[in-house]
Image 1 (cartoon, rainbow, N blue to C red):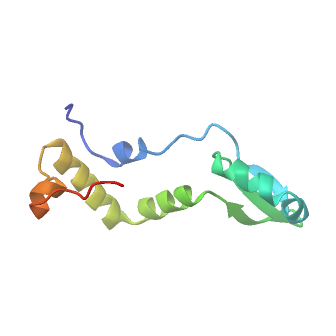
Image 2 (image 1 turned 90 degrees about the vertical axis):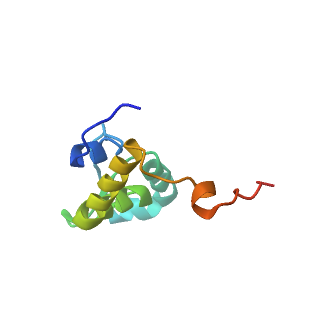
Image 3 (image 1 turned 60 degrees about the horizontal axis):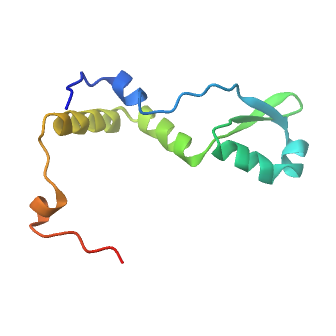
Length: 107
């Protein structure tokens, strides 16, 4: 396994790059097109929701919100980077080794 320097850049490499611009939508159009807009968001689109020409909210997928929360929590991000480093250096235990038993069979 290739060893890599673990930095925030390595963490960011796990985030899918966005190649499309945010889409701006008014509240009335959002109400009328909510189902299709939600489908669009699950495919990676972002929407800025405006009211009277002012941004009022942003619509993102749950995964993107989770990623933003992790990136905002420096302690958690550092723990993730340390865990990735441990894995790359072979410092980990499998479920079977840790609990001294096999995983249950899938039915």
